[in-house]
Length: 172
Image (tube, rainbow, N blue to C red; front, side, top):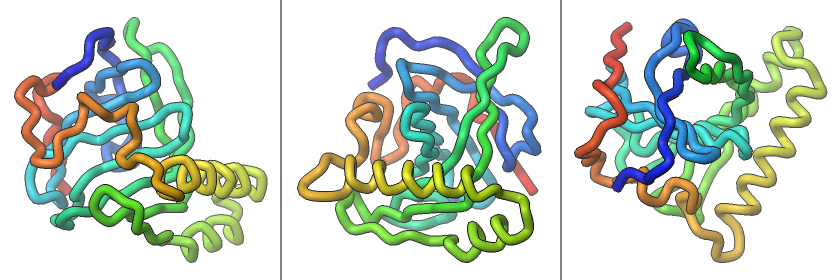
């Protein structure tokens, strides 16, 4: 299941209060294995660095759905490892099964962030363009979903015999 050419990395995002946690980098895919209190068991988080998205299959106890967050990344070095800081851009896509049915959510949160100044118009515009490109590339006209870059890293049953490291356990 795991691909060759893996490299240890770190990821920091909102749900960890931006504390770095272990991750693995394979080409332009970053992933980290999580046991988050809101999920129904272990989940593998994926980040497509070129696409500016975070993907989780069956989060929050949802069955048969993907949660796709539009994000941005900042890459820095941390203790000789690449650290990817992940910033939420407020736009989200929920993909039913393996596509192509999807729905956009949290548009109201994006609008509120724009109006409050938490998100600038250029940043939101970039996220909207990235969202449209992702949808066009992976969910329209017979496109393959999940994205081919996840093949060999994703398992629909969440059976990851070779977890990248001990899963990160997160509690509220």
